Length: 435
Image (cartoon, rainbow, N blue to C red; front, side, top):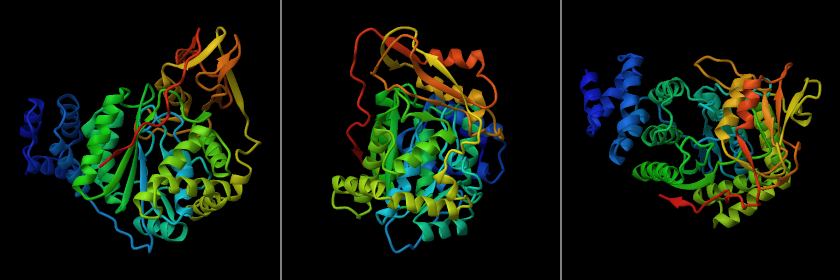
């Protein structure tokens, strides 16, 4: 039996834990031998005191070994992508079918919304009937039939991470490099993938807003990947402005479909092509990343990526015919505009506030078990750096059946500024880091 209090005391004092201590604590919690309050105390100690690179890798390994580790013989290479989360980040939804259309299977075990960010699974479940709670057998069948599977963690897949992830969400212990890195990598390693692309965000809408902290997280995940022999690359991307033209589950499905039709926002397409090109190159399906980008762009433009997504929707219980008329025009829409108080150039100053506004409208969770309404969201008719005139709408609030509260509107008004002089927005993608 692990002496949980001794482990907590040691980490609380800022000392390094031995691998056997981390494995013993995590394993006992996964088996139900330790109560949640022990795990919460452990998470808080790590949050405050941090972990060394060796401890972080040991934590990822302990979570990985708490459950099953999948492996699929598909006759083609596999790759996945993970984002550290942001506002309007729907990249995985068009990316996975585009990569599959180019011959690389994508077994994507995704998460739900965490804090102010929306989760890929929650967005996909805005499609009526779409099932993400797949068993291992259903996950593999979807992967074989379509080249893509979007699934949640099963009870058997990295159970320690599943429990700790939920605790972090409701106790405000999210912004920690060791906890984020070990959580992400334990799930990705459990998928049995051959290559991984990491989208590590910085800026006001990221969990780690500082650019160097984002780079620290990228290096931590790449070090874990290297220790397991997993081919990986990390792209630093800017989340100081929302990604795309919308945020909110239903709205983001619509925008993902536009991308799959060869249209949609340029920034969304840029990331899909960049990450997809890297996935193809790492998986051995493209000679270079540039060649991979060209192939992904072609899959978006010729309809092959959309065809894969339609098969995925059907395979996972949704109605692909509903996608052609998305969103259903019969749904009642009420959008409240928020206007510029003066003329000038739009700058986003607090993107995290945009995400929390969607949560306040019912589009996210504040506690375990909260139900999500996929309808609420935000529309961004003006790009950062563009000139606006006084009283011109800079964003619109979509809410079901009633006007957004004054508290939500005040939060949103505080998320942007109108600059007196023009400025150049920060680039979306930085130089990639490799393991």
